[in-house]
Picture (tube, helix red, strand yellow):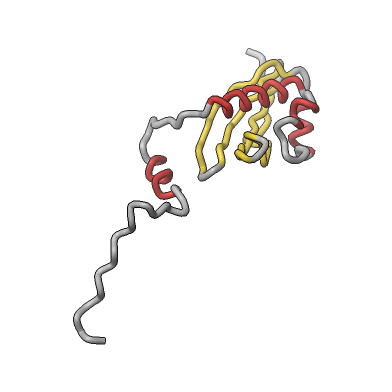
Amino acid sequence: MTGQGVPATAPPSATEVPLSDDAREFIALERAGQTWAIPEDLETAVRGFGDALVAADGGGLRRYLDRDPDAAVLAALQERPLLRHRLVAFAKLGRHRIAKYRLEGGSHTAILNARWEHGERGWRVGALDLVKTEQIQPA
């Protein structure tokens, strides 16, 4: 030690690529009302997957899923009839995109979260979770 203090750090070079953009994303989360653009190919996949969920189309689901859904998700999909789906939330988390679906039937609803990942085969659902189911009470 020479007693001259801590040496100054060099600023990062302009060509240095950060390992993660998480810091920018977490800052963006604090901005109320900000929306992220959904890439067109992902928007098409999200819509197609929602249609396959409502139709309980096994082949259609396998087109997007990396693994079979768990028993709770399958049970929610077997409650018939499912009439429509809505995308009720969308979030960007690192390289993943989280889509929250509301599946509506005549007497019930189911809320599902799908974690979308982009890879060699395009956008795929890496995880599908049942958030909750509810019975609709007639008015």
